[in-house]
Length: 371
Image (cartoon, rainbow, N blue to C red; front, side, top):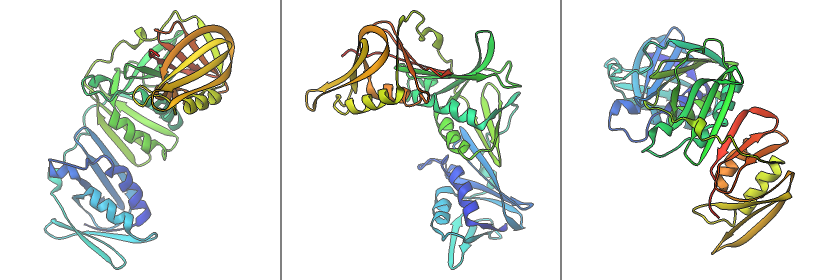
């Protein structure tokens, strides 16, 4: 194998693929990036056995070939080379050493056989459809903060993507919850998604996908089965195993009888929560929201730090005193981009619904705290 490639192009692709590789690996091959060069294309792939990223980039290939090399080491080398460098990669006859050279810099990296490299990207993926990149970004951003990190309830450690119905219209819906808050986002069902199985996309796959779609073109092609999902765009393919579990019936968590409705400017509301929560107790991060007519008072107190209050004007006319975890509340209110934020409440012990007045595609539920 022998090729030459521009440093910037190689570094951009390595940035994408190396982040899948765990820092500590008990299986040596999983620390390596699979490198294939042929027909003017350099293809690189990494995997942790649950997630795989495969990316192609143009290169001047003088001798086709393939090898695997330490992913993080190669990334660090390319990152530290001067801007504008041309990088040469070549493999020795035995296939045990890869030379990386640029200008006066020369490195030799130990290689492992390509036959040892596992592939998870194959298999039959019967459901296929496309989503605009902007919609997929919104789907992830509006829900990922509510994913659980508890290992015991592993089936909550991801985003539940499924077909649903809203007022007689078929939608593609994403839901995430950690038991303290719930985020739901939906969009019109794409062509080809009808009849899709409900799947839980793991937290790590969601994180890697979100980083990749920032640079994505117009449409992301999604193919899935009951056990795997694949996202393809530009020259990148991300494949992931799905969480093997049953997502709970989240509809039961969304309250139907809340009758106290207030509307508030989301930017003012978010800023006030952020300021007042500076004083709140470090563990619970509790803030108290007191509604009296058209006035909302947000308050917090801590035995060590003192107390804080701030008043915000609201529209609506209701009296209630309810506590929330400030971080959970901020995670939700920071997603609201419109001019109005609607809170639908029942009593201090019941969950509250939060929505963007100008965007019906997202709905949030937050459990109260005792304060």
